[in-house]
Image (cartoon, rainbow over all chains, first blue to last red; front, side, top):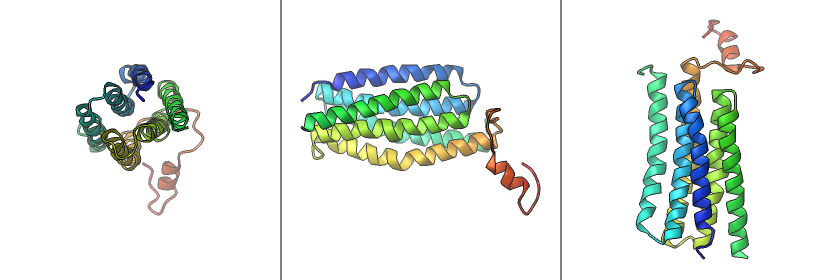
Length: 86
Length: 117
């Protein structure tokens, strides 16, 4: 059953494109980090659904690393902000 | 039957992802936006990954990877949201003017040391 997977992938990409508004117009760095975090989560889910649509197992490593390292990135950004290193 | 469950879970995840994205764009405050960003993961990504797990079966390569990422998001998302909110408060990002309470400031000013932030 591969029907409908591409719909979810395209919808998630559209939602991530909507989040780009906040990434561009965020008043502070924290806003941009929140938007970037949400965008990377949506992108991970979209790549998952694209892998299930295209029947390629190779693509499955991409969202795994994307999810783990995007959260590491958010934590590192907040640590830099908190210690006033920016 | 299984396809109906998959479609229902994917619909729930898609709708919550869309509402969370609209919330991140429209909310007036960093802290409200952090709450919406947490909802992106908790109610948006997790039902979508659960739909993939149920649709493909948990022992296939797709389902096992989706299950792993779902567990990872469930652990890492509160930590990242908390660190972001703490960093935003410490760097002095102002609250929305209509906010009714600031418990961190109240606790700091009414505490034993008696000094404000």
